[in-house]
Image 1 (cartoon, helix red, strand yellow):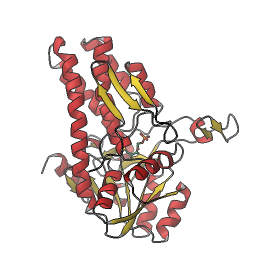
Image 2 (image 1 turned 60 degrees about the vertical axis):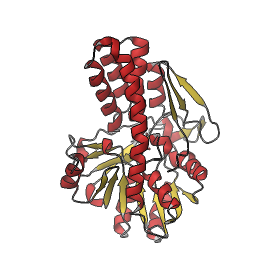
Image 3 (image 1 turned 90 degrees about the vertical axis):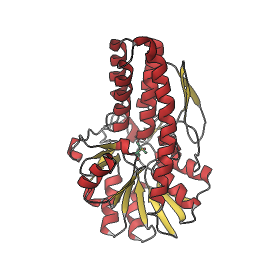
Image 4 (image 1 turned 180 degrees about the vertical axis):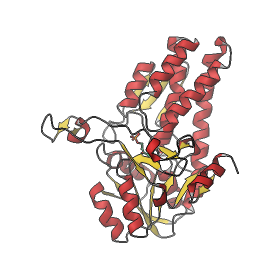
Length: 342
Ligand code: MRU
């Protein structure tokens, strides 16, 4: 297993060090984060991002809260709320924060700080191991000699391990199955063009970047044998929220008989959410559509429709790959079985 970069370093008791993902690939800028406010800002601005990595960041956030604000139930609960509210769609963030909070509140106050950092360190190790297991299952679904298409960024920058969909792609490349990875640029924030292309380069995987608008014609041309993405929240029936544009890829793949699969850890599966209609979708600022990195191309003041995620209906998904195995359709029973360890 190869990990292209370590985007988050845990440095207790003061905090953590993050690779600022908004500055890649031009600049590798490392941020020392030692307050809850700084971490919330980094999450909201996507300096740290990707559903599984947000879970890890949230776990670390509680450690920072305990170190800087105190370990009383009141302080920890307030910090947990603040962290949870930074981004609503990815289930991992809220779930990791809630789990850390419950664990901290179950022990006496003097033990809470150490426990929270210990849990964060264990969380990171678990993340790496889960990505490796997921990649091994997923690589088997990559047809030998195929090119694949992926969307957004699902590599080390999104998980802290080898990645979800990108981990599968990397493993398939190492096993000699894959010939090329097509990566969408991923509007509006260009996570594909800036981050996935950077990671593919570091992993030595032949890569071709395409505008999101070229994906349908690429799939229709028969060039890719598989479309694979990550997910930010998977409902109990398999409906899956992922970066905006994923639904379109899945619909076109289905139209042309190309399998569309999702790679995500079990922590992304939310059985309390019956279907996609219950997944909260984050909307972001119009300024992200009208420009990027200080450069503006749209007229000032123009309105924009800018959802960060869409929901792909479960019936368009051929398989959901996790660290515990592959869930086939129908997803209601297969996800339940996967989550109960059967
Ligand atoms: O908005 P982001 O960049 O945090 O979006 C998350 C993603 O990168 C994806 O949608 C991804 O597939 C899930 S995280 C592996």
